[in-house]
Image (cartoon, rainbow, N blue to C red; front, side, top):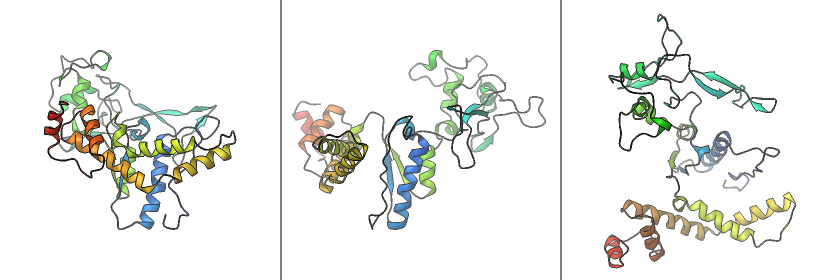
Length: 293
């Protein structure tokens, strides 16, 4: 915040006997903490939150539609979700999370709502229709298709090899917003998720590396209070100029990938033009001259 009294940073001690683990619920709580500061102190700016593809960032609502484990035929089927209290906290009993079976949400086809459970007036009321009925209603002939390919490993490029594959390709299945995305958009903040296995695109990783380098220079201690103090001191000691250089480096990688370069080519280009704000348009010719193409 402007007055320095409120921080988006939180201290979290991982472990079952400590603060637990940083679940999606805690990720969302952390994002809301940051958004509250932004809304109060920077209301006239446009804000973008950038997240990596960690599993904890990718959770959907408990009843979100998914073809995973869907039966092909009609049956009493639903998804298991945690039991939550009035505040949305998960309820545990005897050290185990309490679960309940719920119906998944209905879908859409060509902009028209499509019910996935048989409605009132049908002899199978309340039962899940099954993938075969859902796809038949959408105009697909799945009479000779199996529910899924072995081990969910469809042939590369196949579009209609099994019922699961067809459903995965439908817009209502493919375009489900993540909980984190929905939460941020509700407060007017755009969200970007980085591709998997590309830490070079996330400059916060470089900030972490710098902080760890500083941390290793401090005196060793076994006290939690000393460890927390050293960690905060290391994070506060990262120069703003370095953070900006890290951000420029990540933007160089993004630009290189947009220009069609692969990983090794992008690394060579970023190293050569580390003092530049943008990569030159002649970069492909330079790569060819250097025999890196």
